[in-house]
Image (cartoon, rainbow, N blue to C red; front, side):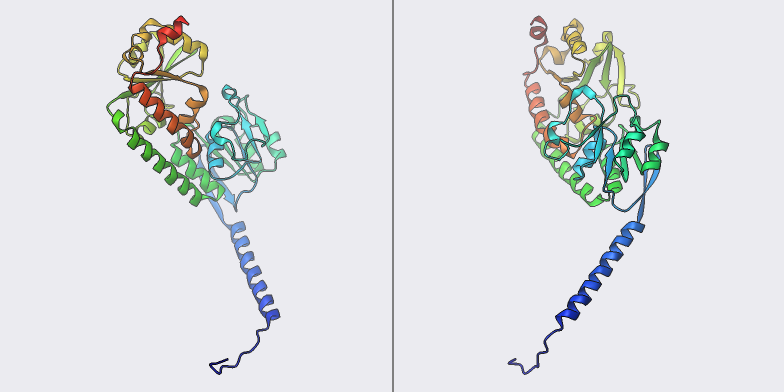
Length: 331
C-alpha cells in the first residue's frame, strides 16, 4: 500500500461465523422480546392482553372492524358476513385481498365460536353486537377486541392498530385521511352556509340523524349539519312520518334509502314534498353502499371513495339539481 501500512487478509470464515452468530443472537432477542412483550387493549367488552404480533386474525363482521383491519394492511383469515343489504365486497375494498377470504355467517347476530376455532386465530376483532353473548367462549380461543358503532373512527382505528401491532401505520392512515378531508373541506367552502340534514324512513319510522359520528364528519368538512334534537345514544331520533316537519330547516336533505318501499312512501307523502329542501330539489336519496360509506363503514379506505362522490352530490344539491320527487312519484 502507498501508505506503507501492511495489509492483513481478513479471516472471512471467522467474520462470517461471528457475524452470523451476532445476527442470530440479535434476531433471538427480537423474537424473545416480541414473544414476551404484551399490550393490554381496553375495548367495548373489557380488556384483552395480546402478546406478540398477531398473524391469524378473524374479523367478526363486515363493518368497521373489517374496514380498519384492511386499512392497516392486514387481510384476515376469515370474516363475518352480516348480510347487510346484500352488499358483498364493497367498492373501496377491491384490491385489498379480501375477495377470496372465507366468510362466516353472522346474520343471526352471533359469531359462532365453533367456526372461529377452525381458523386457529391468534386475535379476534369484532363489532360488539355479534360477540356480546359469546365473548367468554371466544376469549378462550384467542384475545378478543370488541368495537362499538359509536366510537369515532380515529379511536377505532388506533385501537385496532394497537391490537395488530401496527400503531405507526395507523397514524399514517389517520394523517392521510385528515389531509383528504381538509382537501374536500376547502372545495366545499362555498356551501358552508347551507343547512344539511339526514332523514330516512325505514319501515314506519322516520329516523333523523342527531349528534354523533356523522354530524362530526360533516363538521370536519366545514359544513353546517343540523342534528335532530333528542337523539339517542346511537345518534338517531325516531319519529312517525307525520312529524316530517322536523326536517323543515334543511337546505340540503339526504336520506339513507336502505328500505326502498319506505323511501317511496316518504317521497310520495305530500308534507314531505313541501319541505323547502325537497321542493327546491335539494334532496337526494342515498343507496345502501353510499350510505354505509359515510356512516357505519367510514374509514381511511371508504373515505377515498365517498368524499369525491359526496362532494359532487352536495354541489349539485346546492344548485337545486337534486331529485324531483313529484316526477318520480308520478313515474
